[in-house]
Each structure stands twice: as C-alpha cells, then as structure tokens.
Image 1: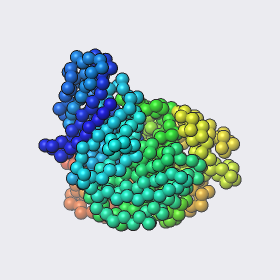
Image 2: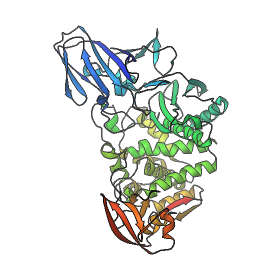
Image 3: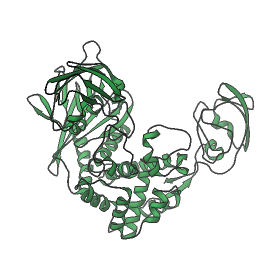
Image 4: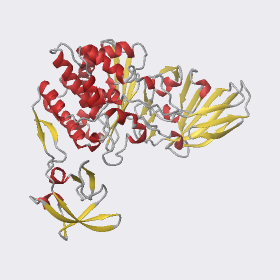
Length: 538
C-alpha cells in the first residue's frame, strides 16, 4: 500500500490523501479506525472526510466508518482519493496550521481490511520549509511501516519552528522535538528528562525500543494534552509564550514523564481486551485504574524521586489529586472499575451530576495506597515498583493480556498477603478512601489533615458556584431543590456582586434563581454536614 499526502491547494486546512493498493478481490471493504488507543471513546474520524473517490469501480458508504469498493478486478491497481479536514486540535488528532502539521494516521488513513498486515509506504509532499520529526523509518525520502498497526502508532510532525535535543540513557536514544516560537534551554531540559527517565528504567530494568521520540507542539494558545505510542509520544502544551514560566515547564515535565511510563504500562503491559487492538469497534475493559491511574501516580512520583520536582512541587501535585478526587461526587456512586468500563459512554466529559469517578485520579490514589501498603507489610523491602517490574516480566514481555485479578495476584505475590479486602473495598467497591488514604500518606511521611472547602456554599450548603453565580456542581447527599445549571440572581431581592461574601455567617438565606427562563424563589438552610470535606497534605 502507498499513501501520498499533501496540503490541499484550495484550502490549507484540508489534506489531500491518495491511497494506492493492488485489489485482492473484485470487491473490498475499506475502513477507518473508530477510536484510538489512549482515548477509549468513539471518535467518528470519518466526519472529517469529503470528496471520496476511486480510480476504478465505485465506492459507497457501508457504515459509519466503512465503505464498499466494488466493480473492480482482482490484481489491478486502485487509487482511492479524498480530502481530510485536519483541524483536530489535540495530540491524538491530525492538525494543520500555518506553522506545523501533525499527522496521526489512525484518524485519517483509510485502509482495506484485507491488507492490515501489508507493508506500507507514505510519501509526504510538503514545502521544504517544514522539518520532520518522527520515529518512522525512512528510505529514499519515503516513510516505511511494517503494517497498519505500526502506521497508527507512528505519527509524523512537520514544523517550521522545530527544535531538537537528544540524550542517551541505558543505550536508548531519546529525542525531544519542540515545535514553537521558543528558545529552549537544552542543558536544563535534557538534565531533567534524563533524570526521570533513569528512575523509570530502574523500575523496569530495560526499555523495549532502541529509541524514543517526544513530539511536542507548543501552540500560541492554552492547551494541554498527551498521547502515548510505542516509540514516541505526542504532547501539546500552550501557550508557548509561557514556555519559560515554572508552571508551564512543570506541566511539560509532568505530561512527558506520564507518557514515558506508558511505554511499559499500556503499550507493553496491556489489558486482555486490548491485546491486540481492534481499532474498528469498541473494546470494553475494567482496568483503566491500572493503565491510567498507576501511570498518573508514577508520572509525578518519578519526577519527585529523580529530584526534578521539589518536595513543595510534588506536594502541590498530590494535593491537586486529592482536591479533584474529593470534589468528585461520583465517588459515592460508582467504582473505579465500573467507571473504566463506561469510558466509552461519557468518560471524557463532565456528564450528569454524581455519576462516575475518575480512573486517572482515583486510580492514582489507589496506586499510592497500594504502594504504601506493600511497603508497610514488607517493612520497606518491597514496593509497587516490584509489582510493576513483575507485571512487565509476566505480561508485557510475554505479550500476554492481563485482567484485574491478574494485577491483584501480582500485588499479593509481592506483599505476601491476601489483598482481597483492599480490592473489594477500593477497586471494585465504593468505600470512601479517607481513612486508608490518610494512613497511607502518613506512612509515606506526609503530614495530613482533613479540611473543609474554603467556600461556605460548598461546605455548608453543598453547592459549588461559578463566579457569576451559576451552579456547576451539587453534593451527592444534598437534598436542596437546587440543580446544576441554575443561576443565582438575587439575595433577599437585592442584586449580588459576590455570592461568597453575601453568606457571612448566615444559617438561612432567601435567594432568587433563574432556571429554564423562569425566576424562582428559594430558601436555603445550612445543613452543617461539611459537604466537600477533603484530605490535604500540609
């Protein structure tokens, strides 16, 4: 198969793509992936295609992501042409701008389903002002891929402002590509990247590839995203004008460490349901807390262990996790395993009130608790590091998919105790984390206190307001007749400039709200239940 890609001559945000292949039957099914690894949600990439045409026979829609190519002859060469709207502005999409082009083939490359294992060539017909960053093999200016899976795992970044740095750790070359109007301090960047890379290699003892590429896009507007692949990661982080600010740089380190850990934990150590990937239909799995939660925990922990994050910075990251978990009212309703299974339903959007927990946030806290418990049980002889090393040896290295029970068994093997109650309560169940989490944090050396939300609306009334008075969340056990989307308008018939200040020490308050175009009078009474209480590291 051969793909030829260039920017559309009449519209710069469209790519013109030609797929050429030899027909292996008189009719063939051509498909486009329905989702991409790292985001377990139907993407409907096909909505970006226009002007689909074929040089032989005829092509017609067969489903939401598939087409039937008919009236062709076996053995003849066929070219399928189409335009693809490349404005999917995140690390997993195909994105064209004036300064760069990110090609994620998983969203834009149509493929005959009978030729998924065939060798693939890609020719990019771009202006020479664009430099190229990719882990793909190149032969005589053409990119070569062993099969469609390698194609989908190997994005290509073309940029007019592409900066490059590299380092070698444990005989593996790591390339850092930064696309944007910046001036990198390569000495500092390489020192820090090398430090957290070394910590991760100490956990797993080996790296599955000879090289790794960070493909980083730094747009001029605010952005934050990362997507893992076998030999590379794509990261988008903006605005580039903040590149030399501490918060920006710490975010770059955080997402980079997270994505590097994914090289082992999801690209090698993979849930049974995802081995192999079936990119053309949903694949439900309940181990998102391992794939994403454990990775989230280690992403920041490795930076701290490497000395890249100070104690103050790491404490800040842990408190952010704690805040996000304890403000999420879905933790009272749904387990982290069930929330993983329902990623395909609404896992990447806010959703209705109090519906789900986060596999990233709760998963990270469960990982922290497991790490602490293993260290406590073994008198600090073992840790979660030993679990991940064995996990990689038994599943990643063997190309064998795992289940949640498999993960639990390795935890038990390492710590030498039955962990059924722990998994039943905190992984498969919805038991509150407070008590166990406080013990775990204190065992790891942190000073912890239980605090109430700073906002009295949250702590006393169970209502989270935006600055303009809109209700953005309500506590799970709040029985007031207040709904998400209500807008607070008046207090005791007076217009309000600050809803926080109007409360003072009031136990009861009369307000007017706007709901569905109507103004309604409500009297709210403080319940003193300490809604939205949380743990904080001090």
